[in-house]
Image 1 (cartoon, rainbow, N blue to C red):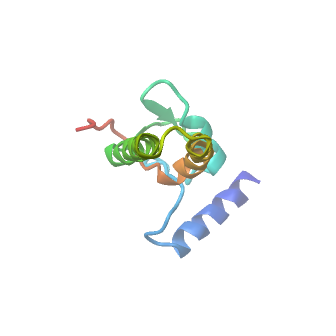
Image 2 (spheres, rainbow, N blue to C red):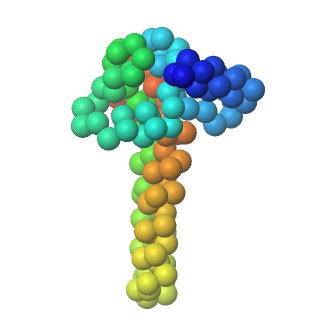
Image 3 (tube, one colour):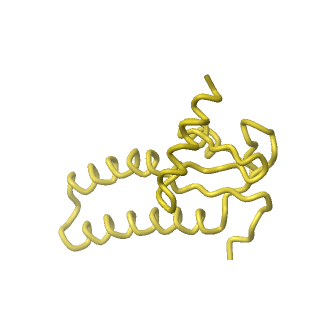
Length: 120
């Protein structure tokens, strides 16, 4: 079953070059599923262990920067709207709606590397 899912993921990745794909282990070149990536993104350490080969993988600097930018921009826009238009339940609901949307998209943004990269 796991190999069948891997073949499907590989087919999607090959048919969508340069598009949005799931992260791939740089050690064994196997593509992670959305669920695996989502679970692994909540680890406390900087290393993420590959579910297939057990090698340590690290989120790239690019992924961390994009993640930080999305979070900062979302919070800044909502705060700006509160300043310009006053506190509103609508903006609170927008923040609540943006959180699961971001969490659902995040696994597609993750890129992995074999070595830990500095943030700057």
